[in-house]
Length: 478
Image: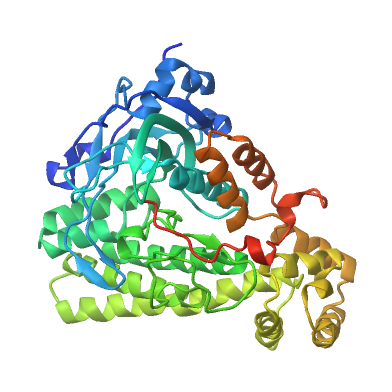
């Protein structure tokens, strides 16, 4: 069965300095991990063809389908605040783009597909752990309604990848609305390449914000998209872990799942990433990190904002400062919904903060506490239930003022507060099993995560980790 992918590669038609033309490096023995059949159908690709030997060869990088134009994209970035003038796709190859059945342009990229000119002495490969983590978490985020890159497929390579020890190799096929980052703009701004900046801005507007007017319109739309995205992360207890500017998507998608995690016990200062020694990207710092990234985006766009530099700086600063009120509005809207509130009152932030403070003080589970409000089980999440009872009384009073019955509020909460998330210990169990050749835990978890709001109350995936199951550190995908 021949694999047909309807490519239409607009990014590869940009000038050569936007990328390096580079094909994937073949692997020894491709083998299947998973194929996302519904996503393949969206893209106009026959899912069965992806599982045939010809399809596996493409997914592993051993063959190129007709119409592919493989490239490694160039970009720069601030990594934990430190400037790197050249980064780029060091272990990823963009095979090309398709226009899906909804008319949306989507990138298809192989991740872990071998070295590129941007590899910086790395091997360009991935082992099965990061591939499974990104597959599970990105697809879970999609099921939760979060804008995100997607996982089309994952395959093994039949090779061993040397990290702290040898692991089975794997390749992830990732789908995104684009792979344009804040760092892509920084790359050309640092080189004072105004022509490339203009071409990139026009390309980004056409792909993500049709109708936006020029660089300022692009900045305005990106600010709004990031405010909405980060508020959604916060409402789910999600921690990206590495919010560098090269991991900040100008279209407002969650991208680059490395040391990401969902919190179990809630605390605003929670950090999982093993490389975030100072807590720069802690849960509570994510809005500030997003704002900082947008300020760097604005700086990169300044050469496109007119000859009057002072006026351009003033306008760009005003645009970036709009992030905070937009974020607060989105945050309030999402957390009101998590309390089942359909109207707004001035004291709602205090009610929300009161619950979060109570959770933090008692290390109550983030997901189970909010889901417990829907199911009448939240009290059991608190070591001191009397403190919860006092807060619950104020919550019930607020619902009464709104005139909303408790059962109606609980049904609304259940629609926005998931029962199942990709908990660290479950993901780690799936990874360890896959390293040993057993994909059963991965497959079971993937099925459970596809229905996060309608989960079976008896599902083991709903359980918080026991103390000896807790995973407190997560690691970069390299």
